Length: 313
Ligand code: FO1
Image: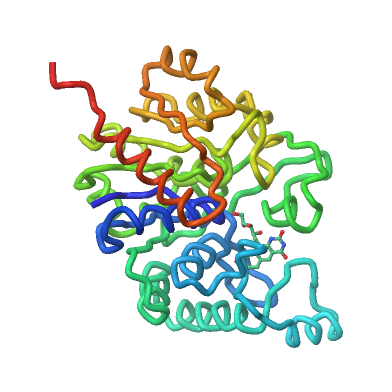
């Protein structure tokens, strides 16, 4: 079984590559819930929905989130009635949040909701949240602390980042079965997601990092930073705020102590020696997932790097 630590858009695309290389049933995606929030009285789980809907081939591929061909009739009325309009929720997308909120209110856990949606939408890859406990990510700015989505979507990541806080992380429990999956995994992949606000929360769940260190599985990541910048999203200011250089080297350091290998983009080939000196293997390839072929190649290279373990001494 291959375990993938996943954020949103980049992770979903990477898993679309994996399913071309190994059976989908052999993959379990552990997804960040730090972006989760309540809006319009609804429980919203952006990364879980992005991964689930991408793998169901229902995602709006141009945006990377939301449902393909969705409409915004309800959203326009929500705004007309004085509701917040900064987080775009399509009519079909809203069904996910309405159904999730109803199930949670009826006593279901987030894991149960995710499993129910996965089956309803016909996704073969197993999907689970990192935790069933709320662990919202807050960004500390000069205006005070705000939820990550307020920082990123509402305020367009314009505020200087003074700190990042995973609220409730101290008492958050790994999702049921997660620690066992980590121990049983034959390979652990850290998807090309934001190291600070997508992968960071997963690794910060008490017990997760130690379980990964104790696991015999090789741990491989794919750098989401290419040529000193992410393709999309606020990884640069967030990595800088955490004292991480915005490069493939910074990504290698972000997961220090966990990695057996990292896949970096060909534009960063000059960084390979420096990263290897950190004690991990490096593979260099085209990491920009333009289409299915590039996604499959990237997944294949990552799995090859996992298997290229040094001969047992
Ligand atoms: N991102 C935006 O930049 N603007 C939006 O209006 C927006 C709405 C949205 C609705 C549902 C959903 O699942 C994701 C949505 N996202 C939106 C994406 C999301 O903010 C980020 O991509 C993730 O939280 C980061 O991985």
